[in-house]
Length: 131
Picture 1: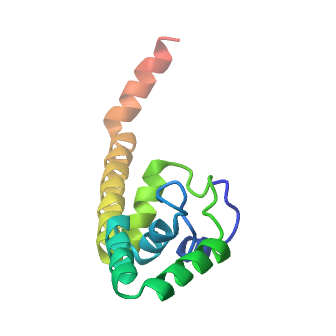
Picture 2: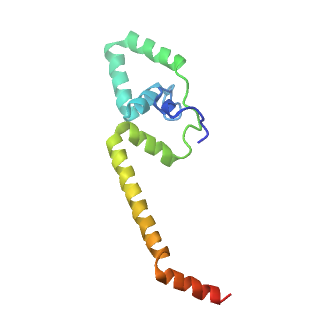
Picture 3: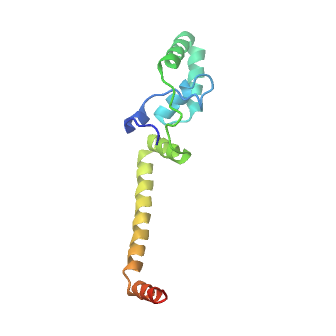
């Protein structure tokens, strides 16, 4: 990952101009709270309908104050999807990680069993005879 700041910076409120329509404020808020940008945009439109001046002032202030999300914030799309999952459903992400590590542990156990078996040693000795 190119971004060298602490991992807590992932939970910071950024503007997201890449996913945004105007300045990326709604997309940044959506990323921060772990929802889709369309939901935040609908809330913003409702705010514009019922509370026009405060909504416009708040949007302009956020557009000026919030820093844009760094371009190289995530190393890959897979990493970005992982962190979005952590934001939206941390228990699901934890369960997925446990399953992945369980699978890795099973595969490692199978490899250990194969390497420590007598058959592996026998195949190695036959291979060494051929040299």
